[in-house]
Amino acid sequence: MDLDLGLFDLSGRTAIVTGSGRGLGKAMARGLAGAGAQVVICARSAGEVTGTTAGIVAAGGSAHGIVFDAARRSECRRLIDETLARFGGLDVMVVNHGSGASAPAEDLTDAQWEANIQGNLTSAFYACQEAARTMIAQSRGGSIVVTSSTGSLVGFEGLLAFGASKGGVDQMVRHMAMEWGRHGIRVNAINPGWTTHPPSAVGSEDDPAEQAIARRTPLGRRGRPEEMAGPAIFLASQASSFVTGITLVADGGWCAV
Image (cartoon, rainbow, N blue to C red; front, side):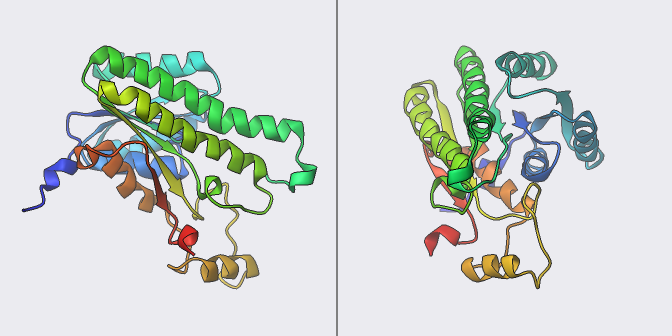
């Protein structure tokens, strides 16, 4: 059977990508726009939102920028309502915002713990739930994609709170997939490994930490932000029409070792 590459086509679909002013979110937004989607760019920084939006439009894509704060449910609702007013519907919600605080487990403060849970799990829940409510009302299904991490799957030094919050994201995705499947809504996670985007501190090639990452990773390097665009397009499109409740690991093989 011939492969129908049209399954990856997002023409006529509207997608929101949170945290898309820079890094992985920006790369995923550019990828979705390149596949034909109308993309809403959103983040807290007005300058980053404007820059990403302008770049997509200059490349021939369709994009609209909205400044918002994912930590507040009312802002997530406003984001979706403005998207509906602009494009008339919502087909894809990529929940990519988040934060991380690094500290040894015994030194982790209450504030650091709470910041990770709020920034990575609770705020993701707000965005997913508000998107699902809209998709259910539309009665045409949809795709929700949440950026998680390999920190939810294996242990890393100093990332207890971050890993716990992302572990919650993975399990949240499974439960949402089970409950919302009846509405034709698919919910999946992308779990990136070490990448070259901030807030990761990337050293030079002769940096011992970078050499250790390269040795430990079967592909021998960090991932590039644009390498997350393919997984996002797959999970957003009809190419993954029978895929829901998964964690798609994109880590160069780190978790396979």
